Length: 328
Image (cartoon, rainbow, N blue to C red; front, side):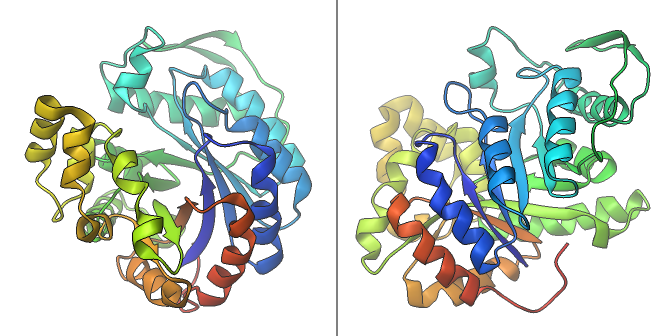
C-alpha cells in the first residue's frame, strides 16, 4: 500500500515544506494538496513542492467545473507536468454543493458534468481542437499546445453513480476523509465489480483514501480537535461515509435540531477512531495495516499534528508502512 501525506489547504504554506522534504527523504510515495474554496489553492503549493523534490508524486485534489474551466486547468496541469514529468496526478469532481453555492453556481447533474470534465481535460491536454458545449462549460475552437505528459486523472466519488463513473472514466478513485473501514471495504469491492464490467484492469486503477490522522502518546489530547472538525462537515455525507459506525439520519437530525454542538456530542472517541487514524507512534504499523486490509491502494494522511512534529512522524510512518504487495 502506498503511503502519502495530504494537506488541507487551511494552514500556512511555508509550514508545509519540512513535511514535504521529510516525505521525499524517508521514502513516502507522495504529497497531496486539497483545494478548499476560500483558502489556499492547490496548484501554487504543488508547483513549489515539485521544484523542491525529485522523486515523490505531487497530487492535487478538488478541481471542478465550477472552480476551473477545463481549458485553464489543462494549461495548469500541462505546466505542472513539464516541471515534473510523470510525477503529477489530479483528483477532480463536483465538490460540496454548499461551497459551490457560495460562488453563485450549482451543478444539477454532477455525474454527467464530471464525465464531461474528465473527457475534456484529456482531449485538451492531448492538443485536440475543442469545439463542444456542456451545461457547465464550452469550447469554441480552443486548442492547446501540449506541454508535458497528460497526468492520471482520478475521480472524487462517494455514492454509487459517481463510483460507477469513476470506474468507467477515471484513472483512479479518491475517497473522502471520514470514511469508515466498512465503507472502504464495500467501495473497493464495488469498484472492482464495475471495473470488471467495463473490461478494465484493476492493477492499473488506483484507489486513494484521504485519512484524517492524529499521532501522539496522549490519545485523548490528539483526538480532541476531531469532533469539532467533524461537526463542520455536511452531515448527510459524513453519515454516509461513516457506514457501520454512526446513524446518518441521526447525525442530520442532530445538526438540524442542535447545530454543531449536538453533532460534536455524537462523535464519541470510539466512533472517531473508526473513521480517522488516531494512534500512538508505536501503533503506526497496526494502524496502517488496518487500512491496507480494506483493499485501498493508497492512504493520504492528513495529519493534525503541529508542523514541527510532522517530519519525525513521517520518518516513523515510513518505517512502519506495510511492505507487501505492489503499489499501484
